[in-house]
Length: 279
Image (cartoon, rainbow, N blue to C red):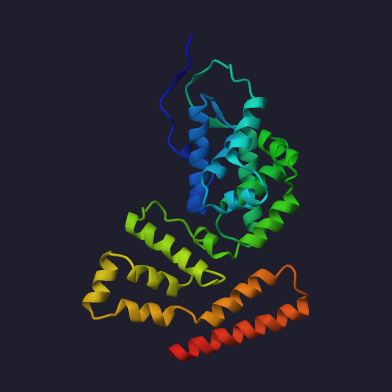
């Protein structure tokens, strides 16, 4: 008898009683991707292995970046899961439900967010939750590759302030979708922050990204006589400051703390001089 599937369950809702308004958008994407992985695999459950795959599939999430930094890659994880599970299982799916282990992972993810003083549960908390639960397929795959909770938490702390992940660490949209033009603006703002070697994406990067777009906001500003090129020149930090920022970023792990403090003071003074020149 061939495999059959019922209608796929609604994304997220199959996870039950958890308050999804407390998840970041990236974490919601991870949970939805996990559910989709279970459906595509003709599984009647969502397991920790699906959560791990879902995290890796949301490539821009902090959780995926942490795993990438630690050498955990999608193709390798898929192969490991296939070697563990019986691929000849013939089942008829009526409703996909999360396993008790997944429910525990979600509980631990909430606890991790609370422990860190964060209001929203992100994809990185899901990765931590997998390892805290410790008994699921995903945890064993990670631990077999030398990935431990301490290593994950240290990598999260290292990556958290990087500009390319700053857009994840915000409140979810509560169901209000972003337009394609706004998505492009935010992606451009992240790239601009990276070009400036800035520690985070700020409103200046967003304004620059808006002015480089062809959306309503940019057209309105141009109609009001705003010169986009002049604004970009004003908001782009001087070359010396960018070089100082890069030097500080590259030296944070290798330079003695006393020297780092001196370099931080130099960067802070250069930042202040630049801001004073704009006022």
